Length: 125
Image 1 (cartoon, helix red, strand yellow):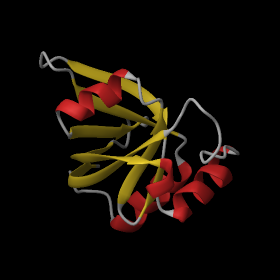
Image 2 (cartoon, rainbow, N blue to C red):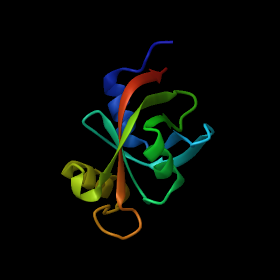
Image 3 (cartoon, rainbow, N blue to C red):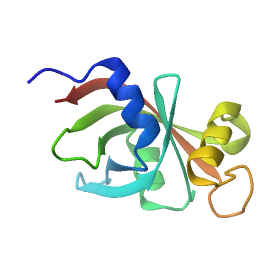
């Protein structure tokens, strides 16, 4: 099946509210969770708790996979993750979280780390 066009991908990433994030535990077992996200400059951003399982996993292994929830028209991204403090994230990411979820990720004490995922492989149909 053909891959989804870049325009379709960008639209879906703007519109979809949840994405599934897969990381790898130190013992090699997968960890999979649905989570809020935004896309900016061909990267995916997720704001989360620095003590979460996904962050512990990414500190040991930067590889991650993402999938949108629509199983009829899958969009799967594989890539590497980089952990950022909220102070180091691009300003448009903060605005996108406000617009998409009515959530100011620059405030609060629990969700203080941002995962920036750079996709290196894309699958979709």
